Length: 514
Image (cartoon, rainbow, N blue to C red; front, top):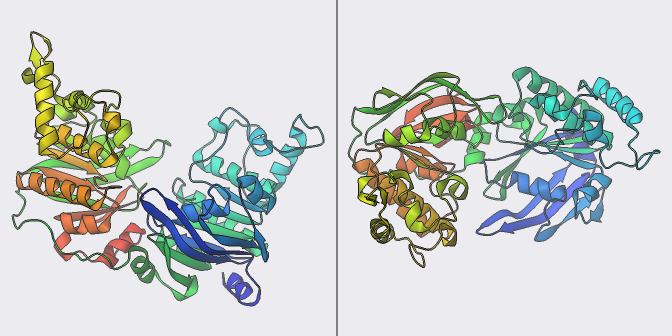
């Protein structure tokens, strides 16, 4: 891997991104970023979720237009307005979520949109011949005649890479490329990257995984909160330093919880649970943990490491393939969402609009969705609309929900008020276990503090809270204990009072703390 470093020291960069900024509503994704890429190197872009890594590369690939800044390729200032422009400049990107047409064959996917001698009919024989050549040269074996929907996730990734090579990519961007691969497939991918670098091509790997940065990259750029915080030669750094750079030093560690200790009563227990994710691979791999009454257990980790699957199995939205889920001592493994609700499990979902509220129903109706069969809201076997309305008026006041009327549709609520409505809906039935997934994400400071206060209040009432959050400050200051997830496994569980930021950062990156 030293070859690329020597090349970069004597040759000008093949790509320069200067002063790149990109803003979205309520967030600055990239803030005046400078990035240089050199021929013959594997360059790691390292950072937590939301650090701005993928946004920056989406700009280089033409999916986003920067608000400010310049891009130079081979010393020439360029305007990249679309992926076609990027491909014309020999830049290709393989996204974390593949973009193959399931019903087409590998060859048809690779050749899609390309002109040939037989245009407008695709010259499949030529495409298949070239696919076989590339597959052999780079050890990316796939069957050109197989349909994309028949392929494993590892094979689909190979097809995406072959698509890029077929278009003669000189700069290849890989977004979280190992997140869905087996260990053997990861080794094969690393060998491919090194082969690309040996041919004086450039590979950019977007990642949060410290072991793969050390294993395969020549240089690493660390992003945090949309800014570059470090540029390092991989041979001169180590996982501890990278972890510290990745998570930063902003976490104060000052505990916000009242002094009461959690009860010894266990309200939730997960025993050796495994479950598959939406792609059919293990999203949870033999995890065990327990949650006590009056405890907040923080789940830390870069998203995509099993947190979604964890919330799903605890709310009846996903089946486990192994293990048990016990709620207040009862075996509720693979119970339905209704059964989980009836046995005291509440859920603040990450997807507020998709699964938190029914947007076309009124706010009042949404607030009784989980207790619709409660006798308080029935009158002669019919819904008692007056009581539903009065309940909504009370909750809107209690939770400071700003809305035109409780009879207005939930769609009229702002993001912060949607979350308050979900919180009111869930907490009004007094759950004993609360799964809170990214509860303050995207909220302004005032709304976020309101949510935190409600969580602390429920902890004081003896509710066991599983707090899933990408905000380390939130995790460290609100939690009694912290469990760190990586690759669908628990890397460690520790008391929040003695947890060290660097230790958590290492585990989030897949390195067991010493």
